[in-house]
Image (cartoon, rainbow, N blue to C red; front, top):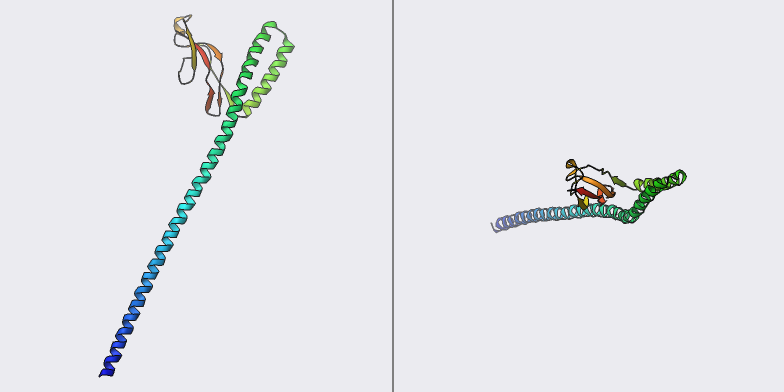
Length: 175
């Protein structure tokens, strides 16, 4: 009987060893699944972070080009103003050839700037004054009742670069 008992104990031990090995395999498998899950999560986070980095640097690059253009445009705006003043004086003298030459040069400069995104803000005498769109430099008594609170004169033209206003039109409004 002791042989049977020994065999039975040995079978029980083998069964326990097998169960223990299965338990270890299951826990090892779960551990590996957990590690794979952690690595997958780490990879996804890293990938998302990299995509955000690419988008951010792209936006920064576009903004850099835009601000570089903006600096150049703001330097050139007084030259456009000088052309407008010069053309107004040449019209008084009535020298058609000189006027034609100056208009050609101004138009060429204006077209080059327009190609780079500069656009003129359209303001006319008699338009309603809007604080968001105009810069009032002074108020004068309105020549007529219907011009009160409206633009009487445009001193300097306004310009936009793309959608951003880089110089507001400077106007005189009626009081």
